[in-house]
Length: 128
Image (cartoon, rainbow, N blue to C red; front, side, top):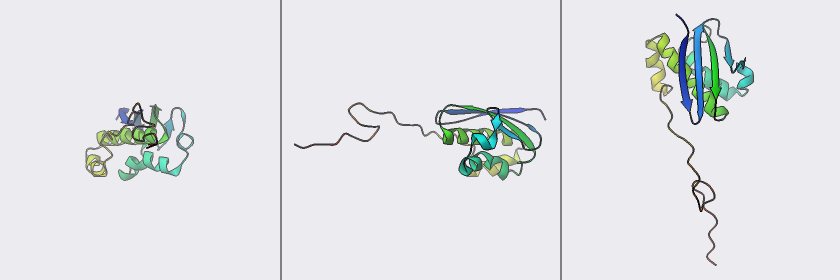
């Protein structure tokens, strides 16, 4: 098996993931995984597809991610890793699909409208 390259997206974040056989080392933008995603919630999201398929210690993962914020980036990485795990073994697809890890989340930020304070919030109404 060579290197598997997959792309995941969420909000404005784009993650490129390169999966190869190894010992479970994960690097994000040439930094250590634990330093890039410091909170336990984000780390759980990134490791979720590897943990569900019991491949946490079998593969080295190199990740390039840009755009968006911390949560969007973590979920983009999760999607890319899930896609890579499907290519590793077809039986992984039946594990990951029911959890929704292979579905692109279409939700994006709604734009601000003119004459309003935010996307949906209006300026305070004054009758007099």
